[in-house]
Image 1 (cartoon, rainbow, N blue to C red):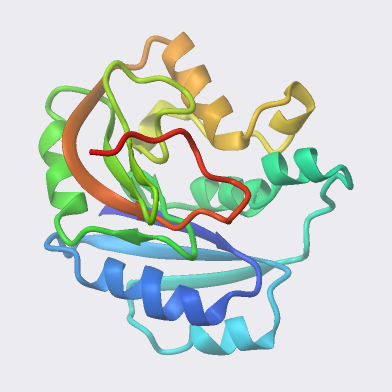
Image 2 (cartoon, rainbow, N blue to C red):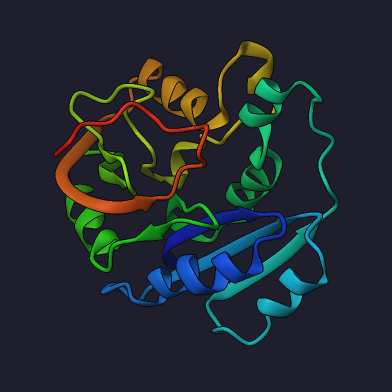
Length: 206
């Protein structure tokens, strides 16, 4: 059994996928992981970039999901269908999402796994590159950019969360909190998030 499944939905950003996300996975101090990259109708360049990286890397390219046309609804829904597929097909005891243009700190998995004796969903702080930092306790949607959770809990993202005006990750954490899942937090920065110019979350300076 693999210890951690890192799930990355992607469309057509092969350069960022292979020069930012992938090096951060490969640099992990914990080596018992799989990187499950799920294409959302990705093109040939993305498929080609994933060939021969590492035996622990799995790439599957799904047909492009039918997303809503409204810009806000699209933002909330994008990547949710391949993310859900990735969780359904993960082999690890623990699951963690990683954006195709984001990066994990080298000790991210090791530090998060160290928290798992306390809880079934764990997270740390995030560097929002160029803007500040995100992440605090207690857990709160909008103040979390990522989390790692025990796959046996059975939670997954809902591709229809946009119909409730919720991004799929916020919706996932909300359902976990409502379901009584125990969370644990470290103030250590473990994730680097590269926001789009018009989507910068509320951050702190330190």
